[in-house]
Length: 112
Length: 111
Image (cartoon, rainbow over all chains, first blue to last red; front, side, top):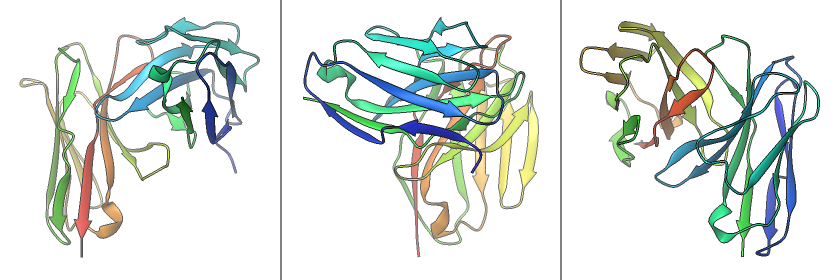
């Protein structure tokens, strides 16, 4: 099925561990995004990529890094996980000038 | 102040009721407004979008934007249990696709 695929779906990390969240889209979209969703806070933009080879910080980038590996893939890395990074992470993609994002099904991350 | 404010609810209504979901925003430069629906443990999906002021209707759903008061609304007629979800408003920032989301309103429609 066409869309945005995120892996893993669930993850538990210990404080200080690192991990990479993977995201891939097969809709030939230029733009890709990483959001985190916390209760009462809505979706907050971590990083985005307007095209292959470019990335920019969003609202809450501290503690994260990203890589736009190619047009399809956009990964999010936590170098040293902290409990404050416990959240649900969503990847999304969109067409240039398009209004709608296509979201993945999310990664539920718990940092203990 | 958040750029987009949305009452998180929860909102509980009986089946068949008319539902009104609302957001306010602070930046008068916003031109594009969207509503997303998110079922439990799923990603958000685009429900409707509108440009500038006015109404847009799609089946039982109507999106309304009042730019003079910086107020956006989503109305659901004849609500169904399958409408139970979290509804997020969103608006577009600047000249790029980047969206700003409200916190989401959790809606429960009970039979």
